[in-house]
Image 1 (cartoon, rainbow, N blue to C red):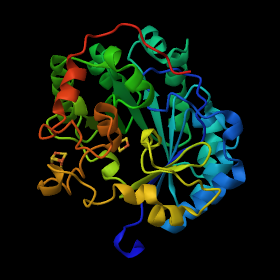
Image 2 (image 1 turned 90 degrees about the horizontal axis):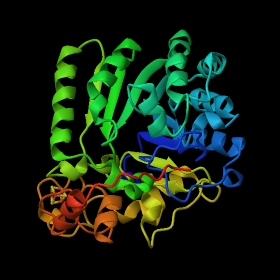
Image 3 (image 1 turned 180 degrees about the vertical axis):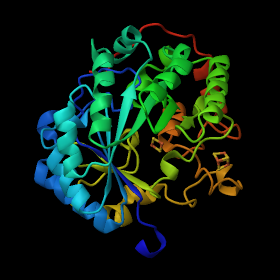
Amino acid sequence: MSGSIPPPIGLLAELTHRCPLGCPYCSNPTDLEKRGAELDTATWQRVMREAAALGVLQLHLSGGEPAARPDLEAITATAAEAGLYTNLITSGVLLNGARLRALADAGLAHVQLSLQHAEAAAADRIGNFRGGHARKLALVEGIHAAGLALTINVVLHRGNLDSVEAMIALAERLGAGRLEIAHTQYHGWALRNRAALMPSAAQVAESRATVLAARERLQGRMAIDFVAPDYHASRPKACMGGWGRQFLNVTPSGAVLPCHAAETIPGLSFPRVTEQSLAGIWYGAEAFNRFRGTAWMPEPCRSCDRREVDWGGCRCQALALTGDATQADPACALSPHRAALLAALEAPAEDSLAFRR
Ligand code: SF4
Ligand code: FES
């Protein structure tokens, strides 16, 4: 079997679900894993070595907030020694210049810093953490001083679409090499808050126009990635580059998943790194093979000429919208379940947000 399956490119290591922020658009599960269930340092270090041996090139240290782990430097050092390109996905509020230098010394290459809004009061309100925005801005000097590459990441939703232009200007001022502007994907807490986060079609169109104009203007100075929202699209994206094709995800307690929301899919069981090798799971686990390739697809995907372009979209989104992960993703206008997506789009907007906790 492994002969026909390419190795993964990237590993998302969710070191912990603990996080001082409480963003309502978080894609972590609503039932967060507790500190006591987290893998220990030695196990994470073994995972890093196994990932490199398996062929993984990029490691994304994530969470929750990965800096909540005091052993972040030790895990990073092992990953870098094993040859992985290491990226830290962080809210920044638990870091300082000294820790950034220690991480850079350990081999960290890149920091992806999240911002919630261009204005402090609004940003702190969205992140549910007073003073967070100021701490993030103060950290940027330390990121540059440590010689780390910087990407600013912004998740868009109804509560910050007024700030797209200002956030682009802020990322430019902060000296980011790259800005990633991504509309919310509705998994975990974001799915729970969907009716309060969902933008209008006009807002989505405006955000796209703003980003495209800025991309043109800033060419050669700051790269801008724009992730359009599936709910306003007529064809889905290839979620994770296709199930079991490019990425794997390890949860704080060591479950190995094809995507961060896979545990919502009933009937699948996910082996842990404490039970099997990463390679054994990637090539052999039933959960990874369940939606790999095209053989599992129903119509209209099975006979569609995009089946090896988007790989049928997102299984977790199909589940969330239709109750069945095996169905065509309703983000596709050809899906027989398109009405489920349209109903969610047309649902009355809500004001109250459930903050992640
Ligand atoms: Fe993709 Fe399936 Fe839609 Fe074709 S029918 S575009 S494969 S989701
Ligand atoms: Fe699970 Fe898209 S998030 S397949």
